[in-house]
Image (cartoon, rainbow, N blue to C red; front, side, top):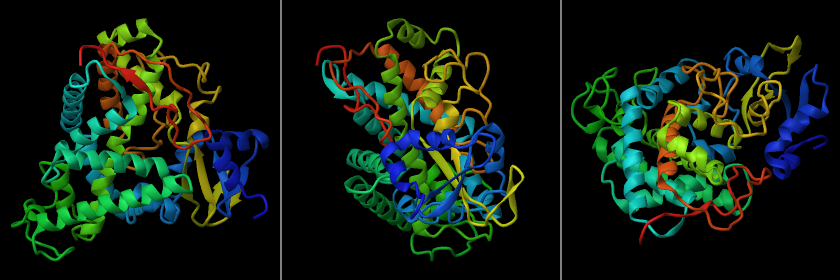
Length: 426
């Protein structure tokens, strides 16, 4: 395919899209091709609003099959538009943005972190792996997964990491990601079927009987598991068991993925004792949250986001052909010198006293909360801020290792997973 940039993307990783933009005239549309499709690149806060306006961008059909079969799942909220999306998104907002629920999960994660690392005193561990396990244990309990066992959480941690690690690459990592998603979807589908009993999937009910029927639509469920079981689609039907499993996993997987940010947080504070002292005390107040924002801005996680252009769209006065892929340059915007002072320098005080504009800091996307913005952003910020304080108080040491973070790898992380020595006697 002449001019196709799929191979350069696989080779260059995070730097690919910003380089495409720099090579072309900054005053005009940035064009390229990816996976054989024409692409228009969106860069800058003004075009974030364009990308999240459903009149200009649709999600149905935007994500390729390999991403659906690893990261998001078939039929997931990410693939919906219009009323169907708004109704499904309300399920996630009710569970992932409500203040009491966010606090409950954060408290659960911190308690699990302390218990886990108290048992690791005097040992050398890999933070990335231990962090995933802490998060999987905490979110399993918080979500109300039935029949929770420690072994289930260990498998969930491995599988969620595999899904995120292998969605954007061919080869063994991608195959592991496919197997991990298929395994977890089947386990959760069976749990949904058991909880609902013998009722036919999708059948409308009076709201009485099995666990999935115990609340009428519109009434709050006690746990995310119950909420997914009780959720009503725009047509009034319940989610079928396979789709319910997909959406349960879209609550669990992103929470476990916070281990990437947690590892980056430790990486940022490894040679900064004064910063660690300030973070441990949260001095000044709000420093841990500012630090969490800067971790999400500075360190590479999401490279870009994709949508498709519907009919009749114009961009900067030029018509965009129907079906053109629209790519929002997340990594490029979070490191744009026109938006950030010294963008490639880690400055944890950057956000003190002022929350970042939602269309300027976009590590998990932008736009309004009710739209296609990531519903797990509140949980990510709260959990990462709390774990930042826990890590700073741990007084860990860092043995010799490779702490480089390769930008050609998506998603990336420190090469050795960030090995650390937990203080105390084992």
